[in-house]
Amino acid sequence: MLTMFYQAVSLTHIILGTAALLLFWWPVLSKKGSAVHRRTGHYYSLCMHSVAASGIVMTLLVWGAPLAAKPELMARALTEPQLYQRLMDQNSFLFLLSLLTWVTIRHAQLALKTRQDRRLLRHWAVLGPVLLLVAVSAAVLRQQGAYQPLVLVFSLISLGTAAGILRYTFARNTTANAWLVEHAVAMLASGIAAYTAFSAFGGRVLLSSLLQGYWQMLPWLLPTLIGLPAIFWYRRKLNQAS
Image 1 (cartoon, rainbow, N blue to C red):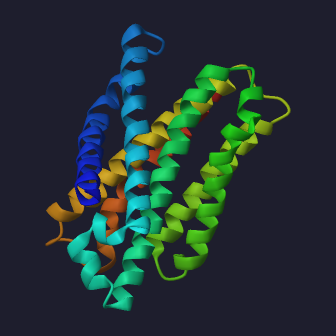
Image 2: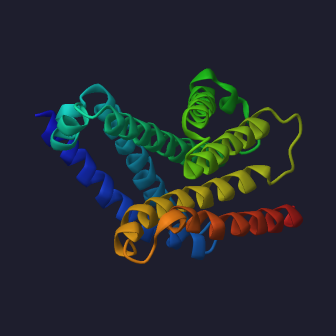
């Protein structure tokens, strides 16, 4: 029963992730504030919330019921301690990425909702997941960062994301359009997360014969290498317009 549930969640994760990849460009390219921008942005956010939630559920199932979630692989892993530890490390990393996605897309919506009034962002229920992201990032970085370059990169990105959210949340003063900057940057960051997942899992399969050694990290890093400069440029553009 749990195996079927895991497979259903996994299929839902893939379908909604694909939908998010396509929907991402409508709010990005449409006129800001238009009906199309708001509607497609809303649908994109729903997809990304669901993708992050399903990712978290899958990782929790692997921790709680590994034989049910991945019966053949985990049956082998239980007799091979090194393989089991590697799978658990991978699961921790995937949990971090799912949590990062959820915190990012949620912050994008909250920044839009609260605008100038940031009191809601300081509520414990809102701060909790951000602080959890800090704790998980630090734990994964400590456990795997020394020998896993990808874990090092994305743990630091997660810590930086959480720090940025907390800085905005508790800033004494902000510019008039700071909420718009937060919303736009968080939405773009969630797009990087979506394309990272697609590039890492889909692109790695397609390019497995071409990418060897450390080049196998390229599908993971490419969306970030392209997306981060775009975010910095767009943030600067919005700040100059304020």
